[in-house]
Length: 261
Image (cartoon, rainbow, N blue to C red; front, side):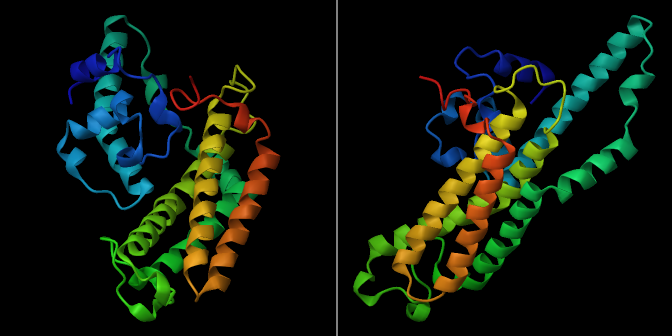
């Protein structure tokens, strides 16, 4: 997409400005995808035909696409500044040391650490229990622990869907946690409620809630492996408590499109 096309798309009156900033990136399940700039950009590109296995994969792919567009924007700014005889040196300075210190502080934060711990725990469960389900909604092995009386196509599909929910959100949780923590203490927030820190923390909490729902539902259908499931739930509950403690105003944030009437 060219810079001109990007500008035209961005100004589309049918789009909801900023809706993509505070969503779960699961476009296929979103009722508002037709109002989203990111969705339109993805589906107007070759990459828009991809099937993503995780929220993190979709997000990385989108930002790679957007990076080239922003590069063009940066070049335009440099060119305009030079025409106006402005000093362009500051535009290209990167505060590497400061960024490194900030990154270390983010990684040490309780919310980030809890999110990372859950990610690795959930990832191990997904890898070790992937043989229970196929992506098309069928069991691979009958000895997986599914109750015999519930061996029906509907149960297979339900379990597969729950598995996908856990898989999707487990990679998004640490990403959103880092972004929310990065916003703590930023003086430039003009609004105590409507700021990126709270918006991101709200999405993080939604990811946790939906993951807990999936774990609880899977646990009801499986006879084996309940200890591992309980451990994943324990880490999510711990993370949820930390979110509420460190981002007390997050639930008051109004997400564009999703929380508006």
